[in-house]
Amino acid sequence: QVQPVESGGGLVQAGGPLRLSCAASIPTFSRSAMGWFRQAPGKEREFLATISGSRAYVTDSVTGRFTISRDNAKNTVYLQMNSLLPEDTAVYYCAVGPGGVSSAGYDWWGQGTQVTVSS
Image 1 (cartoon, rainbow, N blue to C red):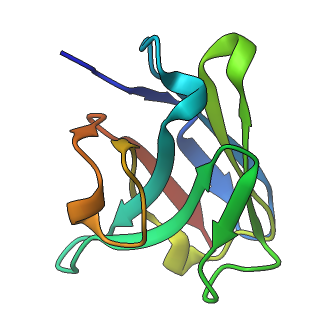
Image 2: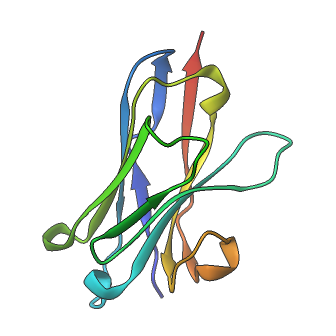
């Protein structure tokens, strides 16, 4: 059973940065796609970014503010978030799987980490 574990969430003021981490102890980590999603109250889960090998993609709505990266030696993927807005408040999830921009492209999900941006 693969269980990604997110960390780094918390309360931050608008305009500030936050870096989320996701560790996944799987032997195929370097060959797996990792994705970041978020879900705000009353809204559907939203795709944010994915990285497969060295290829990264960030959705247009957060491009320029969010960056995804990975450290294969640490089996960890990161989501660097800058210039945070109150509307970025959500539970952030990482996932492991074949990849893509859809939730269906990921087989294992973390339990999520809360990010709250105060105005």
